[in-house]
Image 1: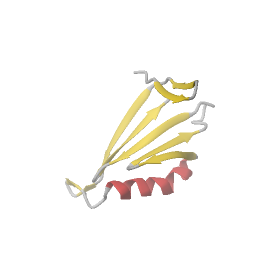
Image 2: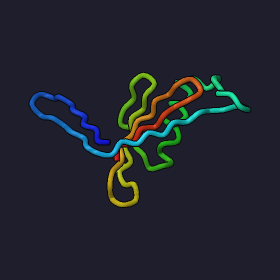
Image 3: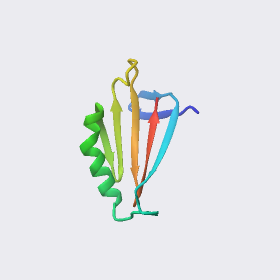
Image 4: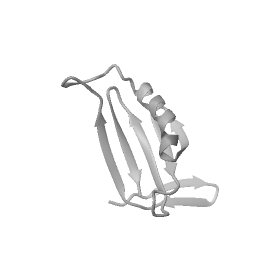
Length: 95
């Protein structure tokens, strides 16, 4: 799957093409989703730990966090976003 993302700025255009991967996570307590973790709490947690993974936060909008990993180990960059929900979250990678 390829994603094309366009940003219009004056007359220039930026396009990102890559492989899109999504990982879904559930925060569970016992056998149920733990909704005590709010969307905001999930995002705040990732704001604190992304640096440990050599990631740089490049933007934040509502309950979505955008990040970039400059080198994933083979010299290529990885872009990502984390969408927070109540008791769950998803991480999208554009490789």
